[in-house]
Image (cartoon, rainbow, N blue to C red):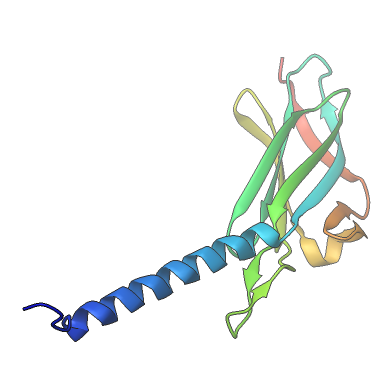
Length: 150
């Protein structure tokens, strides 16, 4: 029959599909509008033989994710910057671009072996230097006890 109305279930499903698509697009735009934060950690590794190949890995942990970066330790010193997402959701479902890490873990390794590991509280040991840019308040000093990594 021409011009007969379509079943109501079709229209409900179509409207639901459009609503879901709109919500997904809005969520994607919300994540894209939040700036990326950065955590910088500078440190010194003591008691490591200078000829050793030593790496420092910094892991930034937020409620939703973790991010990490690794660098070589040169003459006992290292500096690592780790980007992280500042996007989060408020209790009422609104976008919020103020997420910060809960903890920062620093691992020093050589040949796949962990020489020293420490976990730092973000709120107590880091400071904001620019919006969304944070650094460790004091240079980290890590002691590796009696290990020759040659």
